[in-house]
Image 1: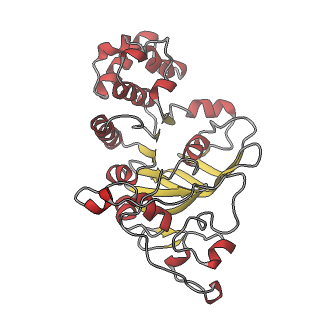
Image 2 (image 1 turned 90 degrees about the vertical axis):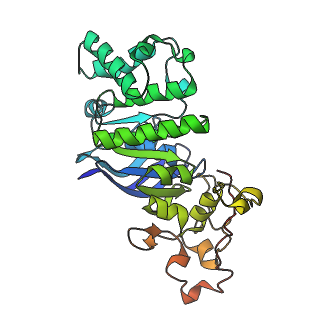
Image 3 (image 1 turned 120 degrees about the vertical axis):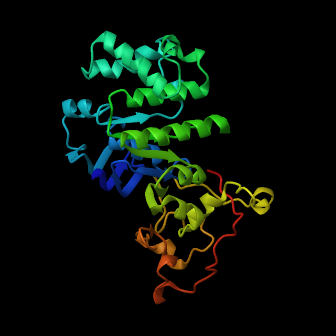
Length: 338
């Protein structure tokens, strides 16, 4: 069953910054979708747009359908009912998302009370149960955020996201600034909760290796567009778009000394969304760009079973494109700076 359907979603901030451009995504119940890309590529804006959490004056067009309901067309009362109960977000940086002067148990119970799911006493009991569900003692409900470690605070954020039993969870960089051991625990926790409760998950990260290990499918974004989409492990191990390939190679691979000791950077940065270049937005940084790439934006093309990539090299180059340049893929040890 289709849980979330996004069609031609575009987000433009005041001032003309096109942060998201024509994104199409589909998520089934129980499925895990990863969204990857460097900072400034539109990942978090996409997440916030799904529940209309963007600043006033932001222009959103396209269609977002959650459980058959048009999110972008909802009245505020309907939207308030959907947030937390239909879909919830685990924001990046738990310390910035939790109220420092309220106990964490009260913060977990708050959405339960706001949605009329239980009495105050029952909501407090439910908060303790949720803490145990994410691997913390129920007694930690009386703690303030500063009394918890980074990993514990992130678990509290996940407990809050689960409080009203949503059908969709959006996790925006849920393991940022955590050490690798805690990161692994949080990722396994999210994975098990999604499987046990049959909810849909959208996980945002710059780390393709993490997403490939956690998610079923992967969408790579650049300059507000999805430039490659397909099965997560296939995209990570055999990317078809040069940007996705460079992003994947940016992280050392276990057992591959070349990727650890001989890194090569991807020059430049993503373009300013308020001043996007003509043609493919990646062409100025692309090691295999052709003249046609600077003139024409490349649509997503069939790149194999269940896969698509927005690159002229996927289906060959038209005769009018000019000389083919160097079509070779970037070296395996190429690095980018996410």
